[in-house]
Image 1 (cartoon, rainbow, N blue to C red):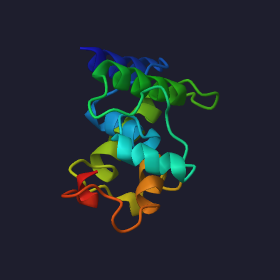
Image 2 (image 1 turned 90 degrees about the vertical axis):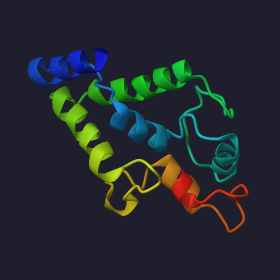
Image 3 (image 1 turned 60 degrees about the vertical axis):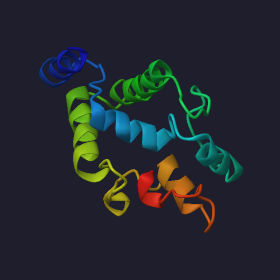
Length: 141
């Protein structure tokens, strides 16, 4: 499929194509607040936290738009001027998602090299008691 093709192309042939799997999608979505719930986007905007604006905040954002935004950010990383080994960048982001920016509300943000620039972490850090919707825990993000 597209992921395997991109991974092989970038890792073996040094082609500057993003290899987007679930781990990469999670890292990019959190780093840029792509597809985040409207209440979180509002708090991030109020705190002046930068975020991706290509996907409008919605309770059910378009999967197609989220995928396009994730791919756009991933492409920017592997095509950056210093990206002479795009396969290494793809592998690093996949590993970051598999080991540090893990799912199910248990990311290891303190171990993340992107922690200071991650929009999700910054938005969550800016929250005050009572900012979460009823019944939601910070681990749900």
